[in-house]
Length: 320
Image 1 (tube, helix red, strand yellow):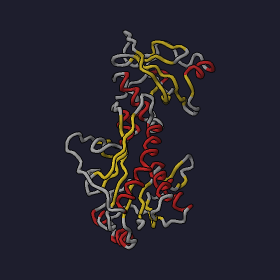
Image 2 (cartoon, helix red, strand yellow; image 1 turned 180 degrees about the vertical axis):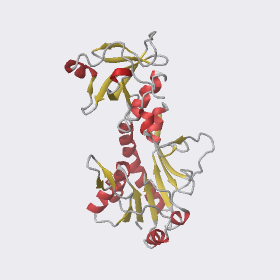
Image 3 (cartoon, one colour; image 1 turned 60 degrees about the horizontal axis):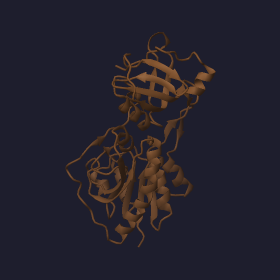
Image 4 (cartoon, rainbow, N blue to C red; image 1 turned 30 degrees about the vertical axis):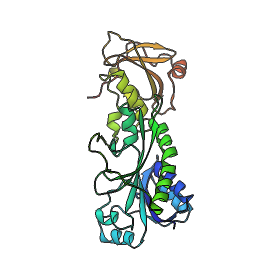
């Protein structure tokens, strides 16, 4: 028998899994998502990607601030679902909610657990220099991504992967993994595995402040941060001193095995390939940047229109 499922999720990653679920044999009886948030320059209240799909399919949508009230709990319990599927929902689920569906709640997590439990597993994997990651389907418990694993699927992280490209890779492998897991659960043919105690790491939530490039770090670390924080929160830097209003985002960079005697943060060379910035141990070449109020462009394109915008010897700010 197909399962009656409550789906809970909010961003694009979750929406892709909801879309796949709607193409399966299973029935989505309700959708839970975060309350509408202000977005864009006009700060207009905007529905989540998950809500948009649910409304288009005429699926009932619930948007509680949390599950602390008896009203929200009873509303959920009365849905009498077989299972809840949670994908990047963004709310803590109390035990009364986890226990309400007949088969409990499962989660689609964007890492191979127990590595990168927490809010930002995709970005932290790139930032740390991991060579692979994946998706884990797990049975939820009251801990933070500590539940038993039901199914795992892996993929490589290439040297060119960004937070955005790896996000899309994990959707590609995560959506069929979810459907496979649901079919196995429905057939009572799935076997859980306890997470090992060794290898636990935590993927803390992304903060805009950490995207400020610290030139006292190595070029390798900074290059990984630039890729990890693309497309959010986007790595950035700015000029130090008299031109400190010139802040720019960094979208693409390369590590160059070239040392210089300059102090970290110095733009010590400029050519058609980019801006060469001294770091702690080597050089980072900034190749694609975005000036305030402009679109992202290659450094070569920017310099063709503004040849004096950057100068050899410029000093980039090192955040405190």
